[in-house]
Amino acid sequence: MADLFLVLHTECDGSFSKAALESLSTAADLSSKLGSAYSVGVIGAGASAAADAIAGCGAEKFYTVEDEAVAAPRYSSDTKASAALIKAADAQIILAPGTSRFARCMPGAAYRTGAAVDTHIVALAVEDGKISAQRWYYRQRILTTLSRADRPWILLVDGGVSDAWQGDAGSAGAQAVAVDFGDADNRVVIKGVESPAVDAQTIRPDSAILFVAGAGWTKKQSDGEYHIGDAGVLIQGFLCKAGASLGSSKSLVDLQSDGQETLSFMSHMNQVGQTGSTPRHAKGLSTCCHGEEPHAVGWRFINERRAINTDANCGWAQGKADVVYIADAFEVMEKVNALLS
Image 1 (cartoon, rainbow, N blue to C red):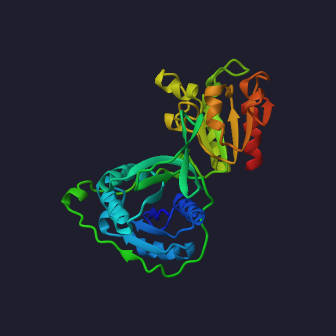
Image 2 (image 1 turned 180 degrees about the horizontal axis):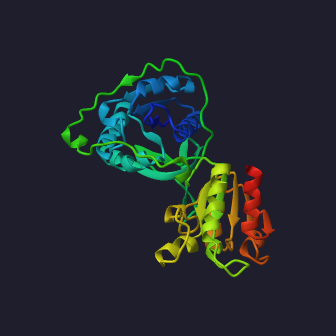
Image 3 (image 1 turned 45 degrees about the horizontal axis):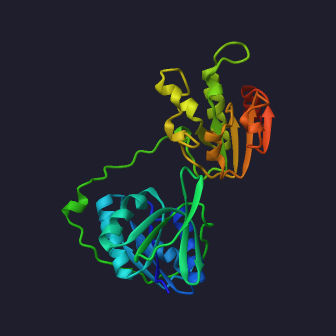
């Protein structure tokens, strides 16, 4: 049987993120399917205390690296620490959450340990003792199942694959792994962290609602005038009141590069669809979008899809949305914001 090892990192406050706890559930489930024990390695500030917080997860052993060099994300030190944990555990199958921190350093750790690595894993299965993984290609249009004979094999698991682990804390008895961090590993100096104001943060992956704005918000309205300022107030008001995450059609974010007046808080980071992101939210509300295939493909993981459009023949009405409101988005969102207030 394969030796299973899970690598996690702490956040700046010493806790685990939701993605880390989800990957812990994935590891526990895979261990059960393999019929073998698994171990956990933790890097980052407060790694030992974090290991104690998940002591009841059923892991056989715990390893930690909590040197000051890994207190903050940094490629060189994270790569060396992750490689040291993998070697200490002598593992054949290594799981890790697909966070930005590990997506950056795990390929380097794979090179140092002679491992193969695959990212964006969305499912793991065991058949006849062999592990197979699934991931999407071509903008989430092709779902593939793959397996490797190479060992070690590192798999970065996407968020949302499993429920976040919940269990009792205890004493993990973690083994500290010594890592010799040199000057080259500390060349990048973290001066501090600047966070945007709460109302300026528009991308919220954990939100229950995705609100997508289309280019129709910036067109002439029924009175023959532009109301881009009013559109911004309505959209930001809904995002703030509902705690929703903001998405955008490609046509809307492209307006900025064309020099046309548009929504100042919108960027290509908000773009959803074939050439953008594929978010996962419980509900989605599309406004002033036509719902054509390149955009709608980004909604395939939204559980409940609704749209507001004045055109009864738009793409959303052709079976791409669960509910379509044939109405003026300005009027609808004004009433929705009033109800939320």
